[in-house]
Image (cartoon, rainbow, N blue to C red; front, side, top):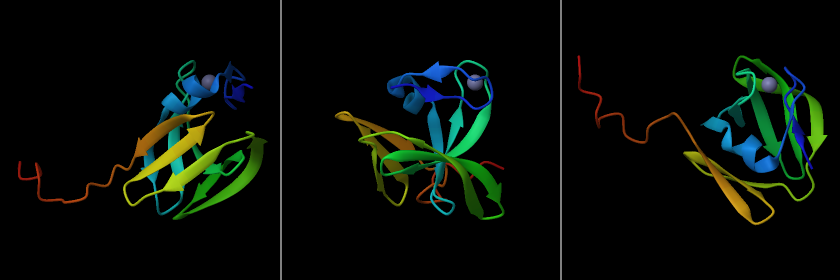
Length: 107
Ligand SMILES: [Zn+2]
């Protein structure tokens, strides 16, 4: 099974595809995805059994297109999303830091 980049129409294997996920946004329940071929950035939502593509509207995310991914699972945590497929796990970390004190004293 191959997953599409909607910008350049390339097809990627799931490991290549999910390695390109970063910056989990828990409020909108999306991850940022940067295409390793064309560099296009998209927000995607991971559902059980499918991926959702759409548009951010303020703090919301409206899903327009869904791509079935049989066996896909996800676990939402406070500061990361875990994506599970075929016995593999990808951990997508949030950009929000747990404690704003550490390392943030430079002025
Ligand atoms: Zn692309």
